[in-house]
Image (tube, rainbow, N blue to C red; front, top):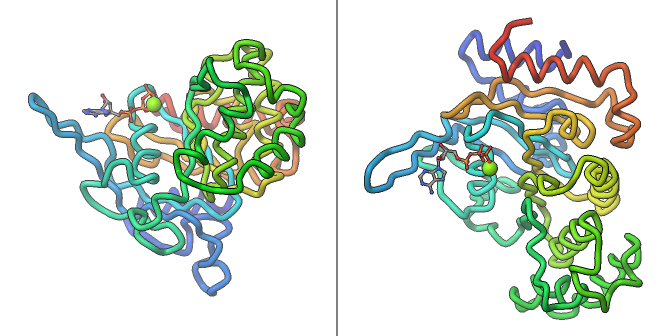
Length: 287
Ligand SMILES: Nc1ncnc2c1ncn2[C@@H]1O[C@H](COP(=O)(O)OP(=O)(O)OP(=O)(O)O)[C@@H](O)[C@H]1O
Ligand SMILES: [Mg+2]
């Protein structure tokens, strides 16, 4: 167990909250460390209300996402993963607690998030370049064409600008969808099971590409997946959520394999150890 996880678990046992332990990058002591926190969830709870029922989806979540970090979120089906992303992007408001982006209430900073979903959601009647520029158009952002085209060129899609989505492979379409999200220059990327619709081999390749793009563009990203291996191969840290109502069961620090590319990580001896750790936590088993 890493020092951070050890302390975090003790912290939970003792029921006290120590802000200096929210992330390994966040010492909580100096201004520099504080500046490194990009997104902070403080005691966030969410209850859905509809005509027939009240559903407590999130229960007192506390965690940080550091600037430039790729933070994974795993948890059982229906536990509240998508709800966490909706709260970070201020699509819904927490029933209790707060979300801060750069220390400011997330509602005031809702334009800084870009979403990428499971299906690529590209419009079949628009070309790749028109699809990529669509987000910027909807947001009335001018002068994005050069940047969007540069991204297409940089990530191997330059020759496909005038093609239509159905002329591209599933993996290429997901890359286009990511570039469309990046074209609006979001500070924070929210990825909700973005590879769920792809076959296994394509997924392996796209994970490699998407990881490289996010790191090279130096984005902060929150990546939701139910695929444990995918989370270990992509992320810097992983928040493990309990079954609904979601609570933070553990935050796993992957800094020991952080410098490795996703496929290299799968060959690391630590990979299996992390896998078992997450699996046990998802099964409610103790070490
Ligand atoms: N708009 C809504 N109104 C009422 N209940 C909702 C609403 N959206 C989600 N829920 C409930 O909240 C809980 C968490 O939903 P959420 O979609 O966040 O889970 P999830 O972890 O993303 O699920 P999955 O793994 O299937 O993607 C579920 O029980 C769901 O039924
Ligand atoms: Mg979901």
